[in-house]
Length: 226
Length: 114
Image (cartoon, rainbow over all chains, first blue to last red):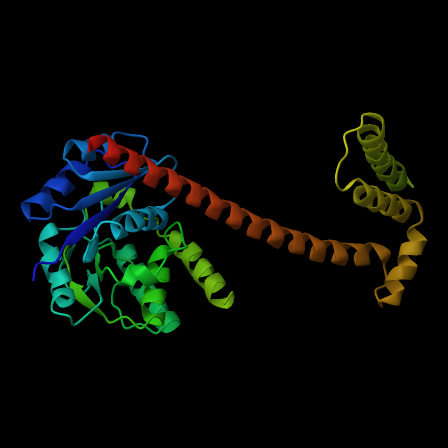
């Protein structure tokens, strides 16, 4: 059975990378691509439109979580079967997607998280690696999840998941919110190894290590607020 | 004594300004009465420091000034948290609006293309 796969990309000032990302996806046969331009001040949207993908634009920057939710709302109206989150900065490889969606297609999972610690991660800076390891211990304790990589932007979901889950965190804490809600709603999840390209470019654009503090704070707030 | 003159004078100016903008100029601040009562209490506390000590001793705190500071800190934290929550709500609202616009514009594009 042929499942309709939508690739969702949240992009902020990625005019230099977005073109290659889209071409990479096209070369692997993924034609349903949605790019959410999160208030970019460069030509990100134009570059995406040039390659014929669906582009939604936030008039001001709201954060990756917000951008993904906007894209999700859009895709929910499009008769999709599977949504794949994919980064705009070139850190992800389109060839990993088939491994991500396989468990969903054969019904053994509703959600598949890509993990850079199960696969080959080239050039992770030591401090980042340490922080990610600590982050995973934190997430596993806090959410009761058995995940090795909780803040990886490469994920695949059965569309039904987003009929139940809405992201309320606009910025980086969305990743833990997502894990929390997947578990709370008892969706079947697994992890699959993926390869991440760390380059000077993508590291400069990515999260700052200090964001970890803000994420923990917001997670606590959400948990205690229930 | 110096303290009372300088700060008392400052607060007196605040009170005068309150009256000026609300009564004379007619700009009706919603919380005029509250601000007025607040600053008058502050003025009284400055002019009659011994009275504040009496209040403080009721709570077993020796100095009026200490008591005032404890209260202020609690109130300030409370207000801070309230502000933080308001900010959160505003951010959520902004995202909702931005999302709405994004989806609407996209729908319009698609209609045009058809």
